[in-house]
Image 1 (cartoon, rainbow, N blue to C red):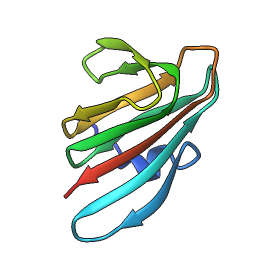
Image 2: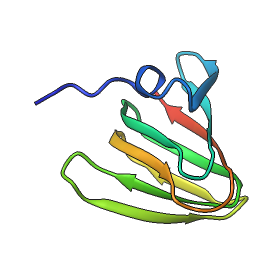
Image 3: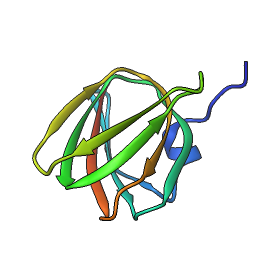
Image 4: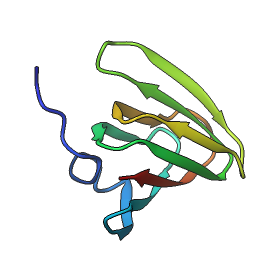
Amino acid sequence: MTKVPDVLQAASKEYTLLLDNDKVRVMELRLKPGQKAPMHNHPNDHVVFVMEDAKFRLSFPDGKSQDVDLKSGKVIWMGAGQHETENVGTTNGYNLVIEVK
């Protein structure tokens, strides 16, 4: 199995590191319509706080995908793991991603 790079390596154009300490890693994700954050790994469980309405598609290594309607103010819990993120909507996507170490 091919090792999938950490999110900050694989998707460095889409994710910006805001804080990294021994408890959390906080990043912002910005995707324009049609833009993708290529396949990447989140080594920790994480919370996604939606800053702007958008529609994202998460694609997983097993070939499955899931469309997610994101509404500003929504909070989503995600387990550690690998996925690709694509903005399949018509608005800019902006999320804060907080990984719990």
